[in-house]
Length: 340
Image (cartoon, rainbow, N blue to C red; front, side):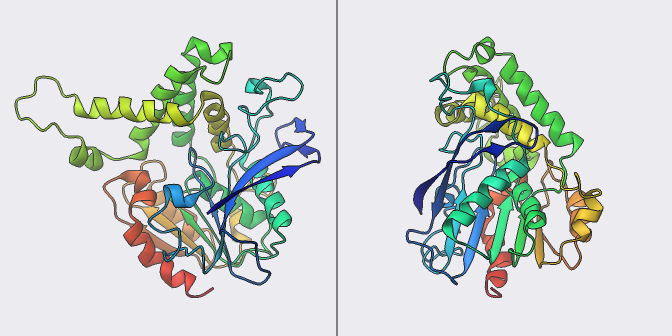
């Protein structure tokens, strides 16, 4: 897919207060210009991903794959507050010449969706044939369907929710506490601040993204005579260090609050009323081992949307099953694409 930037020179007001005089939004598309009337597939990405789904969902996105970038015009926008090109705390504040750090406005899922809409309008797209996302990408997809219901033909919400749960918020706060425990985080001397805290936050998060069975199958000790178990511990440290190399603590902190903002019922008379207003075909896809968005909650979510189809993906890898179980996802989504 091809990287682009939208430089929006107009005031952007944030839902929680504050504004920016201009905004930059990074996004990827199929490697060509949009041709009016062609089928549009819009993918919304998860917490620490970027706007190139061929990078993180390469089993199903790309030429000749399920989401064929030659057959469909595929779009994915980098979330606000992500360090992969869109405006956020890691961006340079023109007033100071330094990163915004904590001076960036608090950002919600609705703000992120509004940035997506700016890109949609810039591209001249008047109809999205299929909108889908997993995790916080699913947050965006649900919110967008309620924001512009007349423009979206069909949607899939994968391993996600219409309102953040206390369990997810507790996890986000524990990760923010890890960031705050690193003294360099609040010092904000440069974007390396909070690196140790970010590694710890990622290690915490990974436990909630995965499942007992997944760790048992991939991180078990090889020796029957080991004195101290270390393999899973080493894996946690490796994953923490890996994120530090490609992300920053300030973007992570802001995005954690974006997660906590998810509530499609805000200003719409409650979640149930909001979801009952959806009239487009929807597929809700749950992961049976997901501890962030448990199966029973996914069933209630799907039942709240009139006519929604409910699907269950089996995985030993918990929430991350939406990224890993591409075979089952293909079986579910291929018939959906054939209806476009």
